[in-house]
Image (cartoon, rainbow, N blue to C red; front, side, top):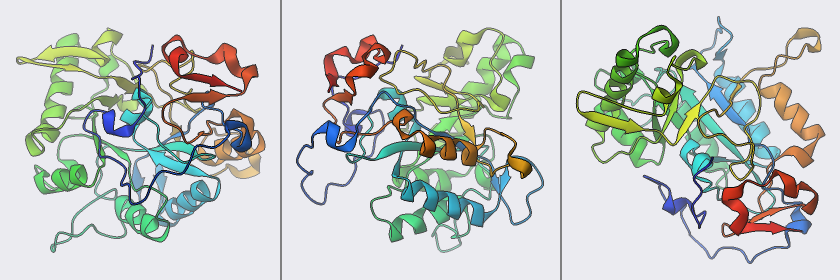
Length: 324
């Protein structure tokens, strides 16, 4: 189902910010030498609030977030945007794996600006930017799913403009965090259009191409999560993200459904080793079975994978297939 472009360069994605090319791209490598598998799974991590005193299952401390970024880096993951995953424009170095960092609800702990216009350092985005400064090959990008009153900054115009300028993706999440399964079709469309207007009024040339379902609940008319219209404005999302509990299939895999993309709640392990299917659980699982991971060949013009994985290839990626 994925609508894949003929070329996977991130510059071809809607509203994309090109990866800075400060030096020539490394020469192609033998996919087998890095155990490339671009049909493997991709973790899409879901964050909500950072707080020193977590009180809910979706809360994490700033130190938790710093530790998770370091773990991702040391394990060979490199960030891409949600829209890049959906479009198949995944550009990470050979031997590395993509990860998508998503933030729901546009909370003040995720991002805010200081009076001098700089990003507050103890917010999630501040921590991510600081981490990238120390690790320049860890691209500081994430996708933020915005509601009304983004980051508790009123209209949030300056904040949203700054995020867009920095290359962060602003996605749809309804105006009031409405449970779309408990409202009628007209209000589903109204919530999505009004929510999008929060970001597009701040950033008029913004293209909102992905959305995250509040509470992970789809409308009764599921198609309205993908496309609809209200008050003379239409919308069509290329990707719809769930509140799931497993890694997402590769966009080049036949299993990939761009309108049902699972995410993983950022969480540590439960006491006693009980499986909670949070990020620590899944990162451990993928460390133990690295052959399941999406591993890049470093060449955006082809999709490399072990020949034994051929049956997993989606029809839309057949012209880029490079089995070995």
